[in-house]
Image (tube, rainbow, N blue to C red; front, side, top):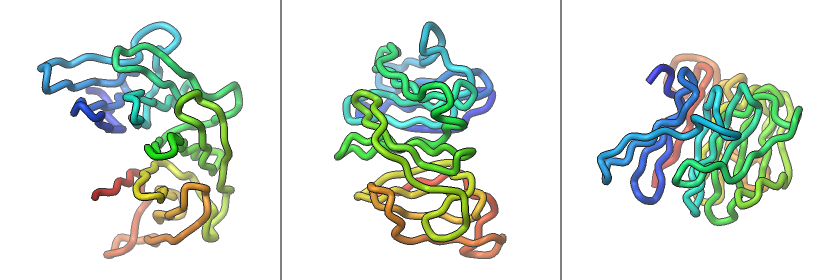
Length: 194
């Protein structure tokens, strides 16, 4: 790998890793003892993949910051959906799926927003956030995680993690600038466990 960034797994235990240096997604299938790649050809050819998330149907969503789009691939690597018209996404990075509603959340750091799409057809639903430092405002949000009806956002430029409901309503936050316990220095990744 040249520059690994995002990691996701599917329900069958495959591990997907975006490699922005090589412009591909690595697929590690331990069960079948196989390594393969996504995004190597055709309309779904990737340039600089960053974020990755897998929905209930097994569709693998990959954000590409250079192409300013989000691509959805099936398990065989076939492109099934492409999200983002020209100028719609400036810098799509982190992705999260709410498996219950089927919503795909996309962090767009340079727009200081989170955009929300229907994962089944790629239809835009709504967006939230604007540049600022108050509760609910964002400053270069980079990565996302969704669990139990909440969306966790790495608010990188504000040195904190913000927590929203799935409609984009601010719930709470933690973190502050610094290097002491409870403080953060440009947080990027965020994940939640059971």
